[in-house]
Image (cartoon, rainbow, N blue to C red; front, side):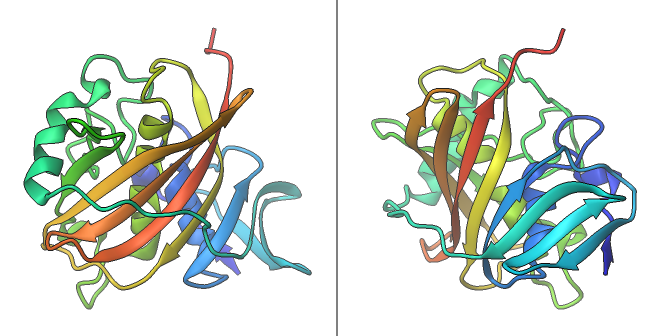
Length: 232
């Protein structure tokens, strides 16, 4: 089996968005999976998917890019803000002032064809949130949003939630665990929320969830991030 991460779905400029890459591999495991990233996923290149004793591996030649196994995210999903509150929180998105990866497919401020998930702090809550209406360009033929795109929507917000009190440090996604409960429909309003979980040394975690406008939970997960030195 092979998969390709198209260049549209980048995180850093030359590598795949972590959540999208995790979601592509997770599709070979099931609706609930844990994916560990070992190396930055390359773009526009055929990558090999192989089964192993616990799940599947993603390989670029002989280099291990990621591994995945069936697992469920263990976390408590908080009550969501209202759709209006999520939309209002976007004005607090810290990436408007400074962004490490402003062309990121998910949260980049210079991407007209991205998800434009600007998760800002919700007033009086330890949450970041954004309104989101996925468009037809990320939909399957039946109008449901591609599962890898749902994974990507659960990715970047966990960074902004985990860094809520210490914005500005460089970090990369090391592991993502997510569960997709029901399909999202392109063209319908949703909201994305994220919250901090824990921090230890160079690692920190955030949780994220996607709801319908009416507040019905559709997907949730957690992301483990690893701080890295700023590029020279």
